[in-house]
Length: 198
Length: 198
DNA sequence: TTAGTTTCCGGAGCGATGCTCCGTTTTGTC
DNA sequence: GACAAAACGGAGCATCGCTCCGGAAACTAA
Image (cartoon, rainbow over all chains, first blue to last red; front, side):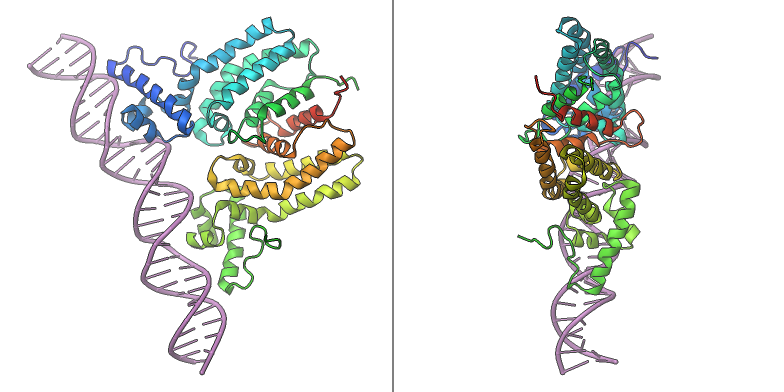
């Protein structure tokens, strides 16, 4: 089990100088291109922007998922770390869960096509899916369990299902005034709260 | 306004015999291939299965959306027609809405990749999106309004948002025991019901 | 039937993209 | 400076969407 380098953190260590340099160049170029063309942008385009051959990108990031996770690693990390903090600072476990989901949604909707990629049935993104799960599922589970424990929400919902549902709701073209994923997610949380007194 | 042929119902009328024949052959082949490879299957594959040239498919169905809608037309129609029936037969408007959503979800999850296509940001499917909306949005609106009128659910939710949310929740690989869109949709409906007495 | 006309067909071909292979270049070391 | 290892770059192959046009097939008229 690779515990210190879960998904390509710093594989440049010990590599040749030009390799390390190129790795950073590619990451920067990819970040820029992702904003413009989404995470599905052609590798050629990223390579051109970085002034680098395609093979260089494939050498550093064998799959597209590796490149995407490397680009967003910091933000995913932040999101993961925010979980326990919120649990400590929020008024209730439910508030903590709610605010954490806000963070998660913020992250997803501002990354062009990222939510789409997460659930894509294409094989290119399975590693991305796996990375998100590895990193965020424990956090979500903790928040969910705490909320159940506190009696804020009904039991019976799994964190995996919740996260994937939220991810799915964030899929689609942006800037459609008729569709706001947050409203539906709020509804979902509403349904999760237990007025189940019958 | 084309009221009798909204999206390619029977454009074979008056065409040459071989054209009509090929149209049916292509539809049958497409239906088979969609089951196996999803609605994103290569046109070449469908053409090969139909024993037909690619141009023939493009001639009959200019966009992929046209082909998909033609294949599923009957089932979409059934779903649309079920709306008013359910409203008349169900115990309450909310039950009607709930059952109709069940039908809609059944339809989506049994069609490989259809839900994905509906929200795809690719241009190839915009017409499909439009057709679903044209046909099903009025039905959903009617059910939603009736449920609001009856006081079953809180007002403020638009049918478009609800339908798209449901469609989104149905996106993804099938047969994952950890993810069942129906559970989340049930939660969503739960949140829609108004315990909002505050 | 047959000739003529219109409609329709088929697949070669073009551009885009993912990914690989291999000759060349750069880097690090002695 | 020479040498080996590491990394590079882009040509090249495969796939797919979509079009174009020469030819075949179906209708019509005599």
